[in-house]
Image (cartoon, rainbow, N blue to C red; front, top):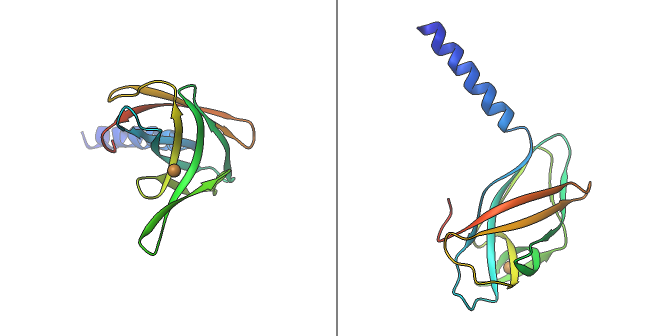
Length: 142
Ligand SMILES: [Cu+2]
């Protein structure tokens, strides 16, 4: 029994290792906004478990006119948003997009998006790799 448990644990660890390899994005969500909102915010966790920096050079979606990388910065109690034309996730690092911090700024929606809808966002990396995300519209983080 002990041997079996060890074996299962080893299998489990192997599975986790495989899942954690490379560059991957998880926990993505778009915050639900009123129907007349001119912009929505998207959040996610970018994991770079590779030995090389990964740079995002663009984002786009058929559901929005423009998608940008932004970061909310507080200065003297006032939040403003900084636009990042591109964003680098250093080797071995993670960047968390979360409220009041980095976010995907999804501007000028082309359709009304409500709770439970899914938005496809295409991220392009500097090496031309395209990452497709299907991001759910939710009230809060998954
Ligand atoms: Cu923004």
